[in-house]
Length: 93
Length: 263
Ligand SMILES: Nc1ncnc2c1ncn2[C@@H]1O[C@H](COP(=O)(O)OP(=O)(O)O)[C@@H](O)[C@H]1O
Ligand SMILES: [Mg+2]
Image 1 (cartoon, each protein chain N blue to C red):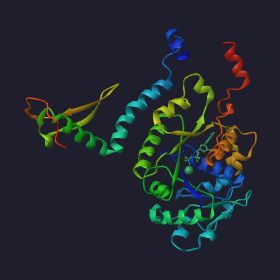
Image 2: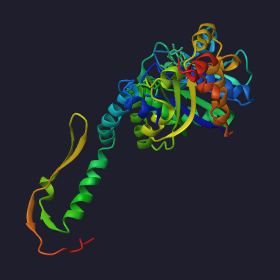
Image 3: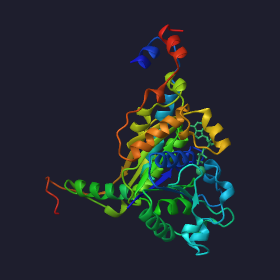
Image 4: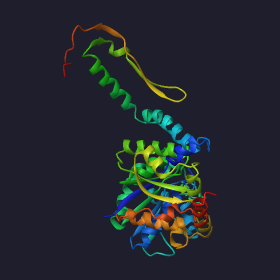
């Protein structure tokens, strides 16, 4: 609240602590993904399972990665589709 | 049966050795039998912080390589009968100790001591692996800086990957004046980012330098604010619930007045 008032009143430039927090938030997205390579692998498997309910996809060509922009990180998936299904079907477990 | 606690951080110079010396001395002052192991091979330091550098005969590598018995290498503290130090080797290289050596050593020591504190070297290589090998609890030391917090986050992940869950955080060198003006991350900021529990907060304190000069841990000085913080941390390690004292956040009477008056 105090921080908010200060910034509205323009008394202070954005505090360096907020810059620290923001930079940490972004850098840790990458760090955590690389400490645990299983995480992206598990995500891939889950994605395949869910998407297969709707379409047939090329599982071997599927790519999942984190893309870093200036002030955001995005999860980018490239999933080649082989065939659309006509209706929704529960995935076979 | 005692507990083995590793004090680690990733980044160097954030206060692992200071914390090990003060926490160990604090636990001994509470009446516990404590042994401190310096695993920073080649960069031995815990001995000078404890003021025990003149008493070293054998070291960690002498023990693991069988040049002496474990008992012979333990140096008794000057102040407390129940406090001992196992110094790091200064001359041998880091590969002289294996994770199996450390597991065996820690298991042997916790038979006899209430607390076995392991001072971890900086980095995430062999020295880190050795330091955590025999530990069942971990304390992560960080300072309120981007690089230190980032490294601490990595350590949380690596500890978890090695089956050491629930590490607790010690925030060192916090400066209430800088926190107040928004130029330093505060306690909540860091807990929010790292998502681990807090064990304690140690303020920046000149007395740490004075105490290191003398080889007398600050925890024994009743006038040191960092010392007070370490006394609290020692109690929390034993399971006592101690709230964060105001002292840890104290901005001083003069500054408080100034702030109230809007100066
Ligand atoms: N709370 C503190 N206030 C002031 N100086 C500190 C504090 N904690 C540590 N220091 C100083 O910082 C330096 C690094 O501390 P040290 O414990 O050796 O770090 P590490 O073992 O993590 O490399 C030392 O010179 C020490 O005296
Ligand atoms: Mg050290």
